Image (cartoon, rainbow, N blue to C red):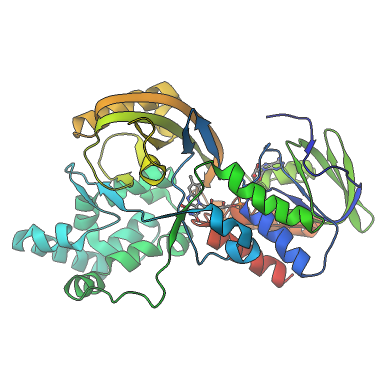
Length: 441
Ligand SMILES: Cc1cc2nc3c(=O)[nH]c(=O)nc-3n(C[C@H](O)[C@H](O)[C@H](O)COP(=O)(O)OP(=O)(O)OC[C@H]3O[C@@H](n4cnc5c(N)ncnc54)[C@H](O)[C@@H]3O)c2cc1C
């Protein structure tokens, strides 16, 4: 990553009304909201050399890979703030599946039909007993394991592979994940697994929504191409965007701040931070209230020719083995490249000692044991993404809240996936958080 500031819009002042740290969804939308509020002199600074934050694509030949699975909806507020993005997206019909502990490909995240109804009377009794036990005897729900067992019972948790998936996804065993996090961000378990509701849905399939959402994928050219349109939108309205900038210090100066990068100094009356909390505290010379752990995500980029063994575009690993957690077949959305499919596999770095080689070997071994990817599989490249997801262990939520309060006392508004240490599962959730922070400020 370059430490030389690259100014993408020519000309820079040294005084701004607001300086926003981070050019991800939270930073971009914040700038758009501030413009609506009549603030004119805004600077966005990011240490990445590109716009869009963790929405990162890599082109290898004519194939474009993302660091993970990114699927959007045409109802997203992002399109209200940046309407020029809409025609750039590729309309898709994404289908998610999962490989369950018995190696079968099933619907994601649950299939009441397969896991319950087709399982037969013996299994119904086991599930009912485990669910009854959880509801009657689990008085205190202390962590994500308890939470999931309360809603689906231990038997269904085991049969579906949900526990394995949670560990791969959230970085630690479900019994170590804070209950606050489970309640805030795992409501999908409750929503998908309320057995009564699922059986009802199975028997009476839902009527189509009044206006079905159109799913969207980024353009074939990649995220840079998409978010350049958002940056251009902001620049036309006078917002300055400084990329590849290494921030070194933030000092208080009277009622405002001095923000120093490796190359520039800026004066501003307001700082909005969407970057990791520990980084922001350090820049301000403020104490931390303990570590805030995050997942480092390894993304493996493959091309393939042969029989992949499943039909969906996004496949989750719910088995007991294999470090990979999810794969996304980009070529289903953009077309194969000279007969070769291409896809990204996501792996939590901690589960393979941070080694791409180990992750690759593990993926090959696991998929070949499960009859997936029989043919010619080639590792085209990889990407290491730090700070991909917050890990909610050891009172992390409380420590994050305390650090955000320390920053607020210093005068800095901190929110977003990293700035709020908030597992925002979708860009829409990030936008709602930015709106609520800025519209109530
Ligand atoms: C793998 C993955 C898959 C996802 N899939 C989907 C999906 O399918 N659909 C969906 O809607 N959402 C998805 N999301 C969630 C969505 O991407 C986030 O909610 C949203 O992008 C968060 O934006 P943000 O701006 O808060 O954070 P980020 O995107 O993390 O942006 C923070 C920015 O801060 C910058 N920064 C960090 N340190 C510094 C520093 N020292 N100085 C300056 N700048 C710094 C970073 O470079 C980055 O640009 C996914 C997220 C991930 C990681």
